[in-house]
Structure formats: C-alpha cells, structure tokens
Amino acid sequence: KQEVTQIPAALSVPEGENLVLNCSFTDSAIYNLQWFRQDPGKGLTSLLLIQSSQREQTSGRLNASLDKSSGRSTLYIAASQPGDSATYLCAGPEASGSRLTFGEGTQLTVNP
Amino acid sequence: EPEVTQTPSHQVTQMGQEVILRCVPISNHLYFYWYRQILGQKVEFLVSFYNNEISEKSEIFDDQFSVERPDGSNFTLKIRSTKLEDSAMYFCASSGGTGNEKLFFGSGTQLSVL
Image (cartoon, rainbow over all chains, first blue to last red; front, side):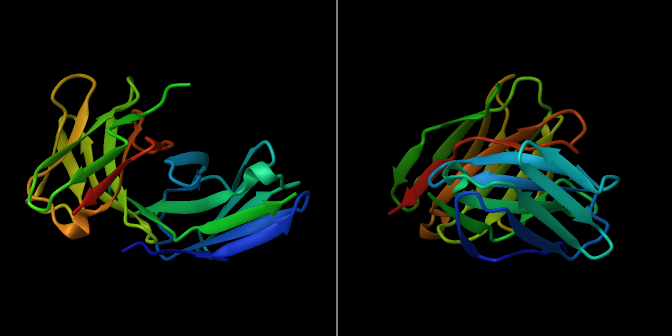
C-alpha cells in the first residue's frame, strides 16, 4: 500500500528566497507523481506531473524531481513570492489502480 | 481553461438524510473521481469511475455511497444515510484518456452533517 509523507509540515520564508519541499513515498513502482497546490477553502490545482520515465519537470519558477530508487520527490520554488503562499501536496498512485495517495501537505507562507 | 465544477459549494444536512453531490467534469475527460478531506486530515480517495462503471473504490466507499453518471455531463455522489463522520470537503476530479494524466479538481462541496 502506498504511503506518502511530506516534510516540513509548515515553512515560512521571506519573499525572494528559493525553497525546497520534500515528499517521500513507499512504493517505488510508482508510475507518476503529482504536485498540487491548495488554497484555503479551495480545490486542488495540479502543478506538475512527473512520469516514472522522467527525472524532473519544470513549469515557470517550479521544478519537481522524482527519484524512484530513493522514494523521494522534491518541489523547488525559485524566487518565492507572497502569492505562492498555499499548501502544497504531493500524491502518488498505487502500483496498480487509479487511486492517488496524498501526503499531509506543506503549508508555505511567503512573507513580503 | 476548462474546469471541473461542483454544486453546491456548501451542504448542511441532518444525520440520516440522503445527500447528492453534483459534479460536471471536463468535457473530453474519461476518468472521474471522488475524494474527500476531513478538516485537518489528508485528502482521501473514495472512488474512480471509467467507462460507466466503478473501476476502483476505497474502504471508505461502503454501501451508503454510490456514484452515477446519469447523462453525458454530470457525475454524482450519493450518500444514502449520512453520519456525523461524513462531514468533510468532497472533491470531484477528472482526467483525460489514459488515466496517467494530470488530475483536475473541482473547488469542492463542504458537507456538514448535524
């Protein structure tokens, strides 16, 4: 059964700082991993999807990596802005099947 | 950009009552999902739906729950007899043709069971 954990649970940084969010998963047969953003009281927005054949994906100031052998993924945010303040969730599928298992999330606050 | 829409945004009900949560997935998507998030807890998978049938369900999705795609656009989650512990934010999601693509989530229905 897939288990996903995220550290840290919360992170507060000054504007402009580069930061890394961490995600660990137990089932290395994962075939993709997604990073989501959740704003308070809102739905989840998919940020990046990394396929198992890829090592990283980039979108603007975001870069996500996937290392199946170590069971880790990271989300790198460059030049953070106050608008990046949100909860960031990673999620991975079971080896077979369609369900995603989510981590607890990292609550990010970027201070102006 | 296409989006998943959910109605209502908030639903308050009495314990034991039936509720139906509604979703309109993105029009050309083929995979549909329900997830929920109890306040302060992780997002949890409930059920996935493909080709007009349930493809996978979790332990949470017991006989009190059912899903339906009554027409070509709507996707519903019914809870027959709500319990206090069903109080949560319920999210509908959809993805494209392979099931190995980004998941697009709706903004959720906050269900409160009194």
